[in-house]
Length: 424
Image 1 (cartoon, one colour):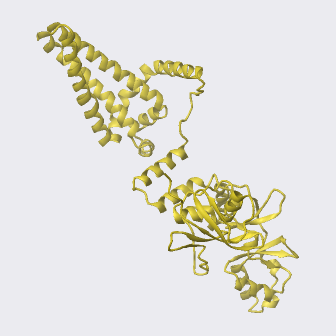
Image 2: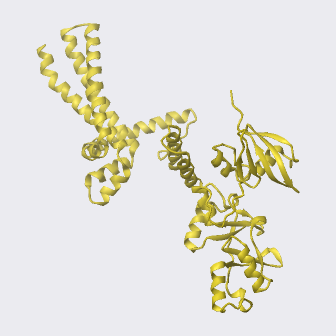
Image 3: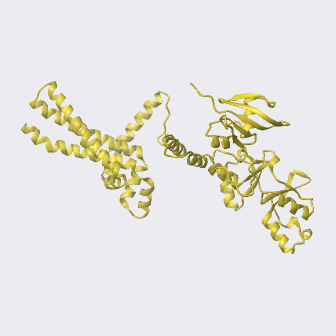
């Protein structure tokens, strides 16, 4: 009993040291990096140490765990040795194991980690100094351990570099959004918006552009009065001008500049020189991703570009609004005409315009139709059917029954799509 009382301060001292290690591990991994960077810029040296530790998180965690395990094993060994002197045999070992399990679990694990979770930033700054010393002491050992682990895994075909990232930052964010949406903490609309931002670098302008058949164009060979009349009939403020062939775009007419020209001519429309107020068209390849195109729009301070394929042939046009709609959904103003592209039916099916994009339909109905092989819903049906369906034909696509309602020449213009069939 005397030996137990004599060594009690040592044992509790080791447990306190273990608690510090546990708190440091939890606090440093849970600290807000954004706040730490801001505090460091404001001159907080403790925050600077936290950022230095987090820059090599694997070594930091390994060093803390190594120190924590050494302390816990030492405390357990001392307790076992003392108790087996008073209670020899297996009973003494069992009692020592039970006592140390309770003490380590409560005072060296749960308690300090709970405090660290509640005050992560403050605890991380407080314990950053001692942790940095531990990392400097155990760092070489951890590096050697990591080298052995990588070499061992290499024998089984797992190739890992010292700089390997397990998850890309975008996938981590996407996974967090999907998780919180499944838990009901993120609304569907917010989920689509956040996902839309992450998808900008993966989508090309060819996937969101307005096809050339749907572009409002004006023949540059018309008289000024006819051009003004055509501009008034259009719902758009920027209109491409072509000469002789719609593929031959010679300029872009802005409604505001046309209005200014009319004012400068004192209302004499026939006196306007349209060529002087047209802007040079801007052509972009259809393979440009939306993130780069958004940056180009901001840099050039323009909202309109014409899309061409690899041969230079006109494919369509893309606007800043088209890109923003990939994030926030359909943007409509007082000049947009509601054509009811997606119309729900009482039986749970929807009537869909063939030109509706798969992403739009997924967003509207919360479906998960694949969009890797086609952009529009009509394109998806043609891809799956491997033919151009006739009116009245029905096909099963990813569990949805799709029936062709209308077709204009080779273009599917209207479909009826049923809800996904229930899976066993």
